[in-house]
Amino acid sequence: MSDPIDRMLDAAESGKSIIKNREILHFTYIPNTILHRDSEQEQVTQSLLPILKQSRPSNLLVYGKPGTGKTLVVKKVLSKIQERVEKSNFPIKLVYSNSKNETTLYGLLVSLGRQLGLNEKELPTTGLAISEVFKRLLNRIREEKLNAVFVIDEIDYLAQLVVKTGKDILYQLTRANEQLEVGSLTMVGISNDLTFKEKLDPRVISSLGEEEIVFTNYNVEQIKKILEERINESFIENAIEDPALNLCAALAGGEHGDARRAIDLLRVAGELAERQQSVKVTIEHVREASLKIEENKEEASLKSYPLHEKLVLLAIMKANGSSTGEIYSSYKNLCKVVGKDGLTQRRVTQMLSEIELSGIISGRLIHQGIHGRTKKYKLTISSEMIKKSFKDELTLQDII
Image (cartoon, rainbow, N blue to C red; front, side, top):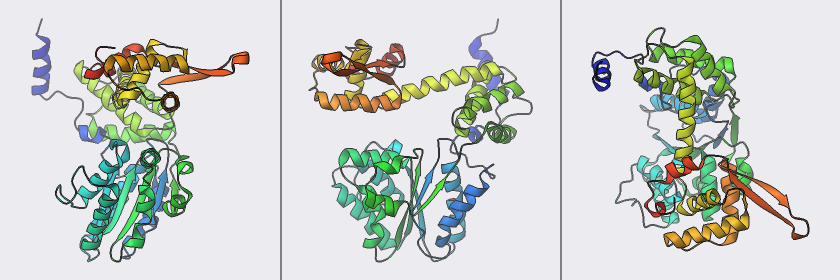
């Protein structure tokens, strides 16, 4: 019997691979043709056309569920505009940041500043007031006479940061042109949350949503066509069985028409098939890939939680199905064990509501007659998943 390591290395060396181009299966890949999005491409182009006429476009808000092609279309339209204006004397600067990847307002503004060409000395990674960071961004736009387009993906996360810090950078960004004698700043916000504007200051709403475009969900048939296009470019011929393709489309189509999830499923299923040295991707590979993606998503989400939210989750795990008061008591005990000062009961109750929105826990109101009512919470994921996600956090190792 051959050694399993040698067998896999031999297969890799001999070039036996069913995936011929992995880049095409990555979410950052922008295809030459974006299927089923002609109308949306026209609307985004129309909105940004004033750049070609050397004037400032309106701020734009793009809405739609995850995986409906929003970022893809905006990036493609902007790159095409960039190609055309590069030779003109109207300097535009396209700046992209995903606010979900930034945990602080400061970090987000520094990310935008770096793309405007501000180095560490001109814009340090820590130590300045938010107002000073913003001032330095505007100074750069003014000095270079730039017509900047700030694309802020998952802008709903930025709105949450604004609420948490009380520093309304969104208002400042949307009103930046009032402070610019030369150059300009246009905001393109991309959001997965159709209700996110409800959380904003009314003054921001009027200036941010000067134009709005809504991306509708893909249906199963459209997702299947998108997958077929990617398969032709990324896999060797006849590498995907039809039932596997149909399942990828059905699983993603059933979840808000998410083409990105469908492509992820295809990629992971292809990688699993390769590891098993299978010559085809089967329906079993897709099912296995679906479980793997779900686990990875939950784990990544849990790892990103701040320490006190992790402690609250561990308190729920240890007192599963318990009331807010019992969870708070458990949380305070855990804080003592790890040597941290506990937050107030009011703040922990607020945290429980925030965590519930993510779907990791579920709560239900219990009426207690003359004692009023209380809310009981329980985990919707396994205790093992929480332990696995938190095992590398040194502070928590004694209590997991």
